[in-house]
Length: 537
Image 1: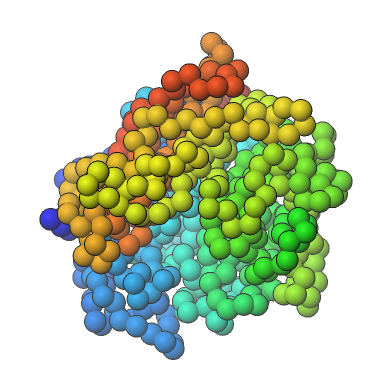
Image 2: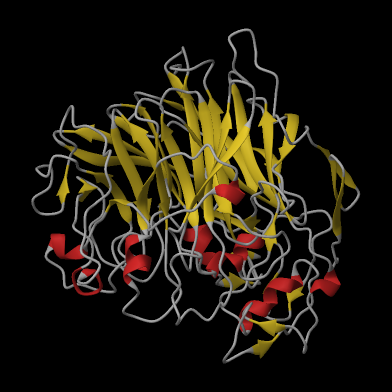
């Protein structure tokens, strides 16, 4: 059985099916508390809802990819959710842009209020790509003053935005013929105002996360670039991975972003391996700053090493590509200097390391890190997304690869004897590989794949946490999924929570509980714990 979804928006109320999601005025998210800060001790969740109508795409008539001039194809499915993403069969770049919503939650996952980020192109606006699972990571600034995330300065309900070029970095081999800036959005906790900083980075792909260093006033970002032939243009290579941006105070219409400004780069030749596709070793997703060091994760793509990285500003931390941060090393405050004439052959100058103890194998089939959270200097929690394999056994009613995984879920790493070691992985309560029902979502099999529509948890994506007074930590996470959908990033996923003993080195029966399951036509993305005030825990 297939249920078609139409979603619309009127004023401050976003309607999803029969549910009403009340939103705050777009000019401000929340009134500050007595200390001048919005939402102390709360969670902030980013999500998106599908708003395009079924007639927005006409099978056999709508040309794909968007803006194509050669090698165009016609759509095979209309704009109705979720069948719309079956268009990926003919357009691998396919996606549909959608609005961004931010929910203030209690620690138990109850919604206090929500903000709809503006989508009206006549003013400052930002959208996400609905099926792009790696987007909308949320990060609290180093001083606790702001929350940041990334999106596209593009129309809502537009196709293929996530693989478009940026206006200043155009790859003529990109099959998508449109161009839109990526941008960092900043939500200030003192008053709740939103501001935006555009960039030409991440052309052909997406910006995924951003964090503000309150002391230096700079943004550090994570993402991927490129959707064309090899070798990639110099601007695509320079605009991948980790970027360094100076916040803008101008409206979007008055901004004129220049060339990308890379903050860090890694090349597998640092490990002694043969070079692969230049610019794809830095396909970063997770991002955090701890003790003055920028950390990033790579967990997808056909190139490089899926592992945890850090930016080394000393040039001494990892002579062989693997090491530990030098105590007291400063954050990068200037972009990497490079020669555009040679970057296609040599890549960017390298200043990044794999964190010692984490995987170093190329194209791993067992390591898929995403979000990361430091509980203290010697305890690091890492979300593993799972491998995404959609093998399904009708006899057991499970997606077998997910159900059999021993690495997907919440990994706990401890720093011991000069290297990070995996202590254990928390999986209990996630029900990996077992499909769950979502009201209004199709049942039965997707005819395009022959597999069940119903999603199952495959692992975890973004995470956040807090250290409790009793010596435990509480970690909240957004799940990844596996299903019969053509693009599993469009699946309704979940927000989950678990408590772990901080000092434990062996599992003690920790079990996840589900706080929220996305509705049909909704996807959960980023999660952040907001400390009680600037400089808080």
